[in-house]
Length: 336
Image (cartoon, rainbow, N blue to C red):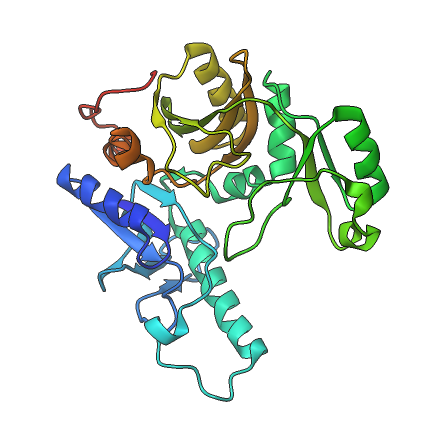
């Protein structure tokens, strides 16, 4: 059995569920934002010092209850969404304030994560601790540099003076969030003249300032275990995400690049990752970032690459290996 932890109506999880079930493998989605008001989550620890005899159950998106201990693999896709109280439970009491809502969100999130950590004994894709650590974009830049990647010269600060000096050193500079926030995407922007902006706007919180990497070739690389499937996005825009009406095609991943990517993910403790690179005019790949659970479904109609099928193959192969069974037939594509 394969479990996926995500939020309600996550298209990635639903598409992969259909693909995995078509391969004859049991697959259930546990919705992290629909715990409140839905019975089924439970954990019991008996009195034995070693914890033997403990029992656990979690609800699925289809109204079933399953035991995490019976799963071979857990896809840790999304785990931190707030509860959809108006959808998954009766409307909150009008007297509910911010503290009560916070309690519901925190306790639902903590109970679900704790039960899975205490009862699941299979393979995580990827482990929660590694996923959290790898989501730190400052840390992953350092790891990528240690693995031999060229990374943009980077400054994290909330000092205008340091940004001004950094701009003098490296030339054109872009700015992006260190972590970001829920809601609309915050895109990478130019910062042409930091001295023209008030110092207070820098001091509010740190931001990431990086040297501009010239070029119009962006690579979105999806790494599923040892197999990699990449798309080449051709645009003059600094950030390709707002406009996908540009040339986007399959891009064969060079073996040396695949090796370095796998080295970075191994050092981060990740089984999979979605990596953003940019190619210089000379063709050198520059590491920008890795999202431990990035979006890949949007690339299927744009490139014709069946990424859902590839990812389903990856999960089924990993689950089968966890039980000691023979590997299933894999779909084509990608190194490894």
